[in-house]
Amino acid sequence: MRVNRRMTATVATAAVLGLTLAACGGGDTGSEGGGEGGGDQVEVFTWWAAGSEKAGLDALVGEFENQHPDIEFVNGAVAGGAGSAAKDLLQTRLQAQDPPDTFQAHAGMELQDYIDAAQIEDVSDLYDEFGLTDAFPTDLVDRLSTEDGAIYSVPSNIHRANVVWANPTVLEENGIDPEAEYADLDAWIADLEKLDEAGVTPLSVGTTWTQVHLLETVLLASLGAETYTGLWDGTTDWEGAEVTGALENFETLMGFTNDDRDGLDWPEATQMVIDGNAAFNVMGDWAVAAFEEQDKALGTDFTATPVPGTDGTFDFLADSFTLPVGAPHPEGAKAWLETVGSLEGQVAFNKAKGSIPARTDADPADFSEYQQGAIESFANDTIVSSLAHGAATPVATLNAISDATSKFTTGASDLAGYQSELAAAAQG
Image (cartoon, rainbow, N blue to C red; front, side):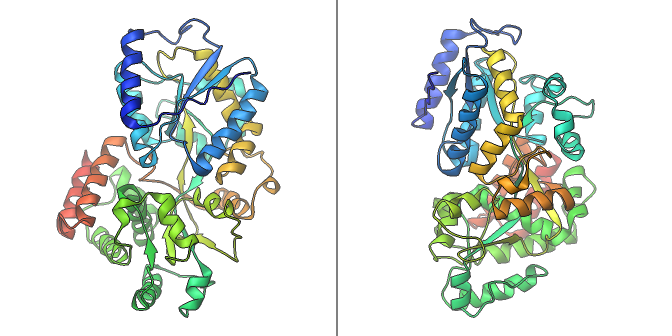
C-alpha cells in the first residue's frame, strides 16, 4: 500500500493549497458517500509534524496500514505553534467547505465551536460499532459527551498537563535536594530563589501558549481542583481575591524564567532542562519522550512530578479525531477512527508519544515507568480539564486568555489589568 506523507512546508503554502483545493472542489460533498471512492483514502489533518508527536503518528499509521491495507493514508500535518498554525488553516478549509477527511482536535470544549458551526458529525454510533463505550472509562465518556449525549470525537490518548520536569544534576550542584517534595508553590519558590541567586535559570518557558500552560497549573495549585474548575463553570469569581493571589504567584514564577522565552517553543524550553541550562520546566507529559529519545533515564537524568500544590490532581487533556461534515472520504475517515480507538492503535501510538491510552484494557506493563505512574494517577486522582489544551474552554475564550497573558508577560499590562482581561475573556 502506498503511503503519501504529504507535509506542508510552510503555513503560507498550506493556506494557498487549502484555498486552491476549495476553488477546485467547491460545494458541500455531504458525508453520505462523500466523493468518489469514499473509502479508498483518508486525509488525516494534524499538527504532529516533528519529534515524538510525529513518531506517535507514524506508529499509528503503521497500525492503520495493518488494519486497513486498502486505504491510502494522506498526511495533512501542519507544523508550528502547538497546533495554532494547523487550526488557522483548518478553519480556512472548513469555511471554504473543503474539509479534510478527519482532523485532530483536543477533546472537550475545544470542539464546541465546530459543533455550533455544524462542521463535525456525531460519532456516537461508532462508539457502539467499535465497542468504545465499554473500552473507555465512564468519566472520560462523560467528558466527551454533550448535554444531549452526543459524542463528536474519538480520543487517541490521555495527557497530563500538570508536570514539572527537573534536572537533578543542576539541583544537586546548587545545594537543592532533587528528591524534595514541595507541598505548595511557596516551598518551590524558595528553591527557585536559591537558583536565581546562584545565576542559574530556575524555570524555562517558551512562547505564549507555554506561558498559558504554566498559568493553568499555577491556578490549579493556588486554588485547588474545585475552585479551579469553577473558573470554567462560572462558580469561581475571576475578580476575587483568591484569583488575585494565584496571579501573583504566576507573576513571581514568570520572574524566574529565561529572557528569550518568546522566541522558543516547548521543545527548546524542555531542551534547556535536558542540557542543564535550566533547573525546572512545566510542561505536559509529551515531554517525557523528549528526554527518553535522548537516552535520559527517569530518576537519574531527570525527574517528573506533579506541579507543587497539585499532587492528587490530574490536569487532563486528550488528542482526538473527528468526522467532518462533508468529508470527501467518509469511509476512510471511519476506518481511521476505528484504528485510533482500537487497543492496538492506542498501544502503538502512546508508546511512541509518551501519553497513556484512553482505553482501560491496555496492559500497563507495555509502557514506560513514567507512563505506568500516569495510568495509575488517571485512575485514582481528581480529574480537571486543561485550559491551554482545549478541554476547559472554547477556542475563542482560550484565544482571549492567551492575548491577555501575552500582554501581561511582555509588560503591556499590570496585574490588575491582566485579571480584568481574564475575567472578561471567561465571560465571553
